[in-house]
Image (cartoon, rainbow, N blue to C red; front, side):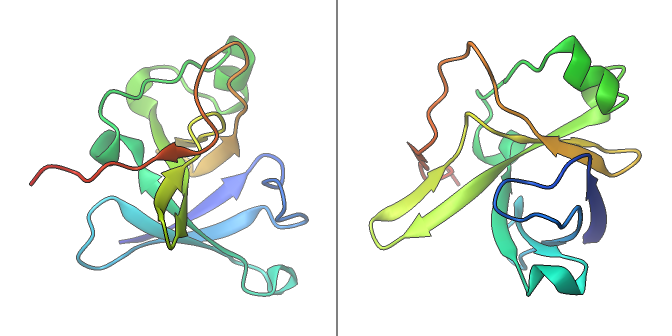
Length: 129
């Protein structure tokens, strides 16, 4: 699966890019490579995880303003992705700033979850088989 994403504003560290390709990593359901679609990104790439696959108990709450900006009417209109940071010591995920995607339009935003106690570097636990 491959799809296009358009951020409302450039994701931190990837400006000026707002258009990205999201491609599923073969053999790893719910794991994606997100790469800049334009030439200005110089091949910028992030790994992101579908939170519903890897973090079924993760239910961040976005503001009404964020919902409105992304044109989300119901929870089913949204997909939540989290940025994965692989290291030699294991993989962590940023739960404080998920990427919320409107599944119908491909528009998305990396939102900061203010007033919520989610870590920036949560260790990723293996998914039970």
